[in-house]
Length: 330
Image 1: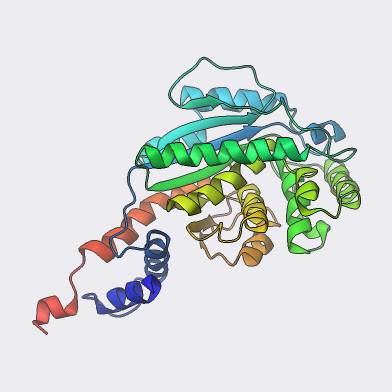
Image 2 (image 1 turned 90 degrees about the vertical axis):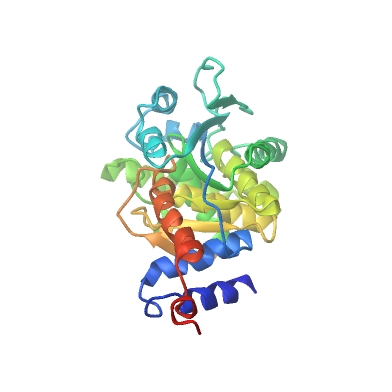
């Protein structure tokens, strides 16, 4: 197996065994995702999927839905945190509108307006979307992964933008892990005691209404950007792209991908464990080790971007370091 071969290579390098700690584990996981002892980390691309959520009407957070559009504009102008981090790490940036209420921005290379609808329905009161809408969002995520593969991308990082999406993610995480919903609800982009109470109530109401059919239940709770990320995750595995996951919402999308397509996480790496309380149990359920613990809670793929320089280091370790046999003639 490639993981065993990678470990043997790491143990044979001209250094004390295990002396680079978790970087060695990252190198082994990177090798696994590509099936190679000489993994490639460039070219690479960040895809941010955007969507809006009807549940914002319940007062579940501090920010109005219009902030989604404002942040999308900043991303396209290159002035958001994720755009700056993408430039700093030598990563292509692509914004895919899966279902926001934003106006259409001018056509440009780093933007796809593929939206299914202008936001989901209010999941606290009715299904967020139909199964047909969910399937369409899944398909557009797969299309984004296929575009990346056709462009020669080797590492794909994914993230999201959508006011209200921690509420949808909490619903999906509770549904798909069996963990108590209360453990999955956190402040998201900010909360007061009152808004947090409303968020707990919205999640409880949505979960009480879920249907027994798994696909219908997921569609009733998801956001368009979450469904698109799930489709992208599954397609990346089929295409052999190393996929770097961001935070809690991306983790919820990974749960959806795995629930609907076995093997969807074969090429996935969890970048970090974030501050949202549901992220740790989601990662545990996924069986993925997070490599950073930097108290992140931004989203937008920011945590995934921060791991990319370490992926470069992990690849260099496997590829460029001499073995003890090389220097001893053994």
